[in-house]
Length: 609
Image (cartoon, rainbow, N blue to C red; front, top):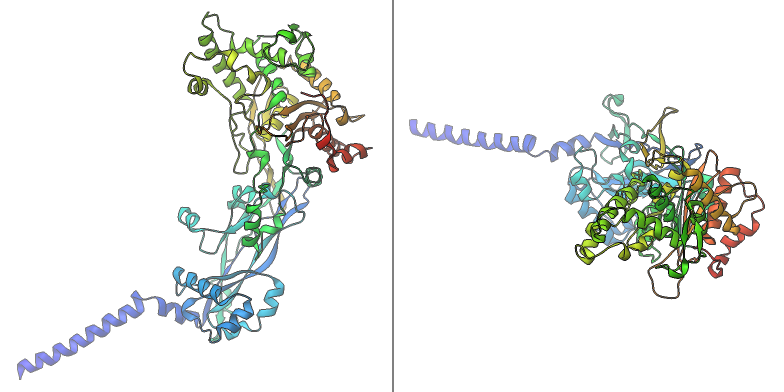
């Protein structure tokens, strides 16, 4: 009898332990029941913050927010009896329904995630009265980006749903599946400021998911914090005008305020309407834009690389002047008949101003030869190596061969050839100046970007220094603007030779007669850049300039691909941009505007350099 008593007690103890273990599993180990129970009465709703706005330099709005809705799903709670009716309501296919629900289940069966994003006001009004028939679904309000004017697409960038790789790299733990994040442009560079801070509110709901009010009067709610607003450096009116001038063309315009480094216009053409990469049609539109053979997603202003051509002769002059290897007023005889390279300038004596005015290839051949062959060794290979190393270092001080540090991603550094490159190309001690002299006129292995050329114009306008080019001048909060600070970079301490550079550029700009403005003096340099394609297409038209001579307000670079001479398309475009910025309108500009807008320059040639 005693042994039976122990057996019965053991059975009861074992059954008790089994119940305890099961109870522990249900209440502690398996949280799904807890989530389900809580959601029968409490529904946590993520409060997405308003993303920061973006203004132009005059506080005109460029980017704003438009309210939309996301349809959220909790897979474990889903009850859809008539799948076809549900798909018809949302205007999706049964296949899409299965795929979206599968994705949600893979994320979590008990946590809410996005099922259908970016539902417009009109769409939500159509479906809201019928959603209560489908358990497991609820709506989250949020916003989508909209643009007041279809410009600046590549500079502003776009936002899209965060991908798995970005989620994995998020060390802050801020982002969750379904969140949106800046992918390119200013949206990416200033993401942490623009995004704000999400909040959460707890709502009482019934078994049908219908809201019955706040849980405990919002005692546990946390308010979302709106993102900070950006005040950009862009002049929206000038930007729109620049994009209209470049319509139907390939190329770019970069205009900088020399005294601050603020970019007042940045045009990359072809481009796209930024409104196309927002809302429900994002994926479809992105595929169309990405497949466009003109590559509108490629920001030519900071990514395209070109040989600088004749505009680089100003750099050659400044390097030689800085090193004391030439004087501004020194006259060098240039015999075109015996020159190593072709020259459209006549034989004669040239100083710095005249060399820039007539863009003499022979003159600048000699200028760079003095820089590269300044050594005293009789070994021309050693001299060339030492001289080219100094030349390369000097060129890089102007920002070439480096990123200038603009505040959007994707900037290309270009190419400044050095001794390592030529050793790899020709072998050590197997090259000299006679093999690299094409660099003297901005050809050969040199590659620059349009923003670097605009920055060069700013350096000359400032007589030897520049500020890091940037697109945002300040951050706004509560009506106050915190200005951003950017580095000042000195290129040359000697300003004595700049009057000669100025004079040469003033004369060169006057030779581009179609670009003249009667009462505004432009100081510029034309260029014609080889396109690298051996066919019947024309070379690229290039113009670099600043204005006015005293207290310059704008430095600009214009590239128009396959448009021929620099004194045509690029120079006229630059002059129109300069006049628009300085005057606010185009005075008697019908001929110049017609020349650009009607694309007459495509069949126009003018003697140029």
